Image (cartoon, rainbow, N blue to C red; front, side, top):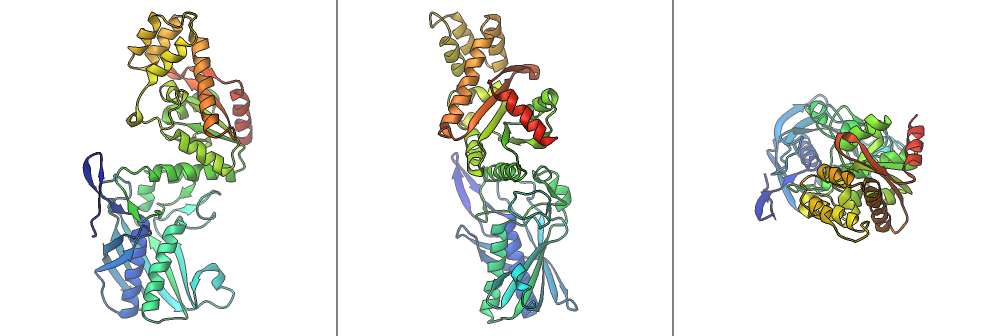
Length: 398
């Protein structure tokens, strides 16, 4: 196994390799063994990031009658926690004569050789539009498919072989169980995991996987014909939507801390309207212009609340400001502001600022409305157009 490290937060962390890298390496090794009649215990590929990956090969089986070889590579995600870490990714490779003329259009081809890629046991199937692959196809994304094809074509070229059709089936026996721990069920990928990766490398604590999921969900909503994108930071928002509006979980895109990125993906996908719903503890940061609400980028919740309150006080100051700044939780600040008789103006101002910041980030190209709730999932405030957007969302889902 090739070792690759990066520095993050003063710590040396080991990188891993994506399921796409594992699938490409297993495919290359199986083809070599099929062509040469030898046993291969490690194989080298170059990842899209330009980094060499030397993979160890396991579980070699040969079927002489079917002219097939199968082998596996163990997914090693490095120091990044991942549901697929430790899984075996298998490739079963068979060879036949080149498909008849007209048939090869379905395959990725290089000269007279063609490569056919499909998913087997434990690899999910796409059931919704808007994802990387069409409905009905195996959830093996385009970059891993390109990696597999290039690895196989390299072997054929080295041996000056042509006129062959190489059929590759990628499988992961544990995939159906493991997929339940991933976003696949929500994305409409059923029956197993996805074969993923854009660089071939897994960086520890990378945000890439979360952002890729958010982008995929937005693509699905757009492909399904939705005009309004519903955004919620997390499970609290989903529960509030279900309890208060009867909105099903799969109607909302969970943006986590990535408010700006999600909004930008929405604009890129062509959405003109976004309804942003969440707990005050997250959304108040957006009112202060914070694009990523993770605590690593600062807190400022009480400062933003105090500043909004100050702007509404006739004298511009008062003991309530110190009380707000001394709060630890936003729900306590809500109590203080409510008891002071300032609930409606303060939280209307917060909602106005949330809307304003988000629309400014998108240069006015996306209209944003927001609904903010607090403790016990009680609605604090909503902007003027929020109810209309919510009704249109629910009507579209019926």
